[in-house]
Image (tube, rainbow, N blue to C red):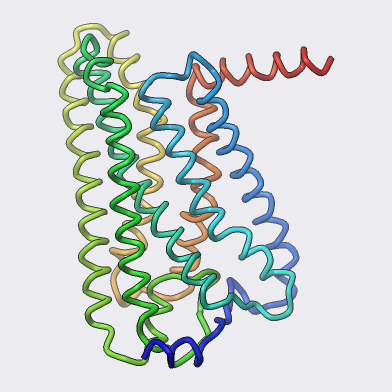
Length: 312
């Protein structure tokens, strides 16, 4: 079966976002700006949180890994999508398709759990401020990011093996990247097992990480309501503002995509949602944190002044 699969399909054709030639040039320009902004913003956040001593707290440790995951899955999808706007035949090799899907699943899954770890971090910071550094020790912080990376690596490999060990009857993917649903629709054999595995793990990942976020924020809200000082309430809310915005946008997009009624479900809606969470959200996240966070703005200003003094 594997031999037949490898000889029958050596590459896939990606239909992309649109089949209208007049839209390809403006869409290429738009998505190039979005991807470059995302690349610069997330790389900048990774560098800034690594070199600035003011950004060495657990909160910025998680923010750095959020930028890593944003950069990971946007880079898995973005460059290939941009190339497909300017080439005549939009193709991706068999193994490149498998690698693209594996990287995408690894980073998008890791982001779910890193966002939930960040909500727990905010809960500890607001509800137990005196014990914050003791509870959120370096070892705990590394465990909260390493476990999701390892789990999502195992999960992405499992799904890749399940899909790519089966024979394909077609080579045309009605999407702009290799995603599970359009790939499964091309399989010749019974797909119930792989669909069940994907459904179970997707539901577990989404529900467990979202539950962690909701519980953390309910406890934060309860702690804020018990505060007697208006200034204390304002400060507590301001520390959660950026993360809450990111969580709302990210989970809102995923829930819209996967929980919409079957009657209103279409491939065009899937593509639009996929564009939003693969390219737009990774661009927005560093902007949200840099515009709403005083420490990041101060660190950015300080780094810029140092660079100016070096080159002046």
